Image (cartoon, rainbow, N blue to C red; front, side):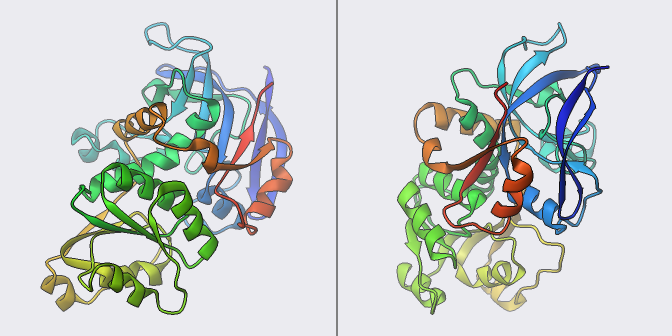
Amino acid sequence: MPSIEALVCAEPGRLQLVRQPAPRCVPGDALVRPRRIGICGTDYHIYQGKHPFLQYPRVMGHELAVEIHEAPTESDLRAGDICVVNPYISCGTCIACRAGRPNCCVSISVLGVHRDGGMTGMLSVPTKNLIPAQGLSLDACASTEFLAIGAHAVKRGAVTSADNVLVVGAGPIGLGAVLFARLAGANVFVFDRDVERAAGAQAISGATAIVSAADPASEMANHTSHNGFDVVLDATGNRASMEAGFNFVAHGGRYVLISVVNDTITFADPDFHRKEMTLLASRNATNHDFLQVIQAISSGQIPIDRLVTHRTSLADAVDSIPVWATQKSGLIKALIEIDD
């Protein structure tokens, strides 16, 4: 049986480049060759041992641009096609799937988290999770997933051109939310305690950065005449930030938690009711969100060249990932390139 290279996180803090048997094509799946792999905050957390729901060893990688190697004859996919991968593999039969919400499937299996992902030479993926992306660059395809999470959150918040929107957290997910809130026509503000990140999000998106480290709450209030924001989206993954965000929501406003932490989030019930606030979770993304992102990229509305800041190879990622896990200056999105 032929073998392929794979980058394995054997245990927290230990990455290995190994050879392992190539996967076989199973019914309903296509064999694909990953060509670009975005390195996500989830991957850094897996490497650092901070992911609460993971079993080691694990091949990471869920932000994928892939080339079809072998596809079922009954599918519309052909060898050589370039596709975006929706890494959220759903059961198709549970209550969420039946309601058209496979992104929160009861038995969801995420590539690179619950099962081995794309940091490898060959991968078997359900055809329903492969989205053809004719005309998109490999970089753009690999950037679609994290942008789709932001697009999904904006949709959950029902953002419109009438809204003042605050995005808290200017990492890649937050930046995706900023970009799609702007595309919805909203007046968008972005806050991050890392002034470089907030300023970078402003330069890329045109949103207004809130950069006061001394008293950000007062600065936020000043931007809305002390009324609060119609929609607040938190993308920090920090419990204290998620709890503080309730204070920034206007009366009648919506609060969307993109973030998830393995902890309990609390809020003041009298204030919550006084504002008649709507609290929403936003989990993953659907194929519809992926298609929305692909359309936005194709029409030139997303500056992919400004989002991809770092590159490495599969072999060199053994050394690159530990560095980028802690050294974030100038880093928005790093890609692993596999071109051979």
